[in-house]
Amino acid sequence: GAGVSQSPRYKVAKRGQDVALRCDPISGHVSLFWYQQALGQGPEFLTYFQNEAQLDKSGLPSDRFFAERPEGSVSTLKIQRTQQEDSAVYLCASGSGYNSPLHFGNGTRLTVT
Amino acid sequence: TQLLEQSPQFLSIQEGENLTVYCNSSSVFSSLQWYRQEPGEGPVLLVTVVTGGEVKKLKRLTFQFGDARKDSSLHITAAQPGDTGLYLCAGARNNAGNMLTFGGGTRLMVKP
Image 1 (cartoon, chains in turn purple, green):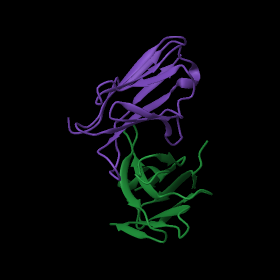
Image 2 (cartoon, chains in turn brown, orange):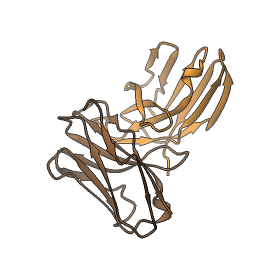
Image 3 (cartoon, helix red, strand yellow):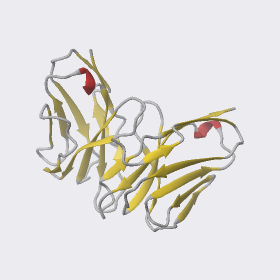
Image 4 (tube, one colour):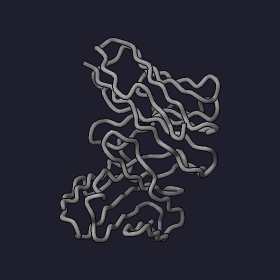
């Protein structure tokens, strides 16, 4: 596709359920980022991949959050035992390399009830 | 916790007015980016400024990077309803320019 694609667009989960959010980056982009954007706030960094290697996961809020990119393209962000404070828009962005601009997807809006 | 403070948080103006949005930090960034985000969409890059004191113009938008590379401003001349959106600044923490720390955003509404 022409841009970064995220699915699902909307996800409603009951507290305690596990969820998996998918990101399809732009083809050939080596870097991939996940951000969390709470309502009315700016995006906050979660984790960063260069190809299949997860180089920085310092932004993941707890060990309930896990991200992977096993073949260096599609990435999945998994949240186990969801809590209400996990409700947010989860944004994925990809870039082609050094000093290249990031392209953001339209995000997945997660609502935990 | 936002290391970049944006002001104002909200701004509602009439079409044709000028406005300035500020982005301030106590940290030095290798570069600073401005994005615009519309509801239900991801942020879209408007500009990247790299050099202290740099000024970039994009039609009616003027972006300035502070001399010390800690702050930036976005000035819009003769605002139009199409400028409505959330404006985000983001500072890059690495030389590759992709490890970004975002500000909290300025929500702009331009009324016709």
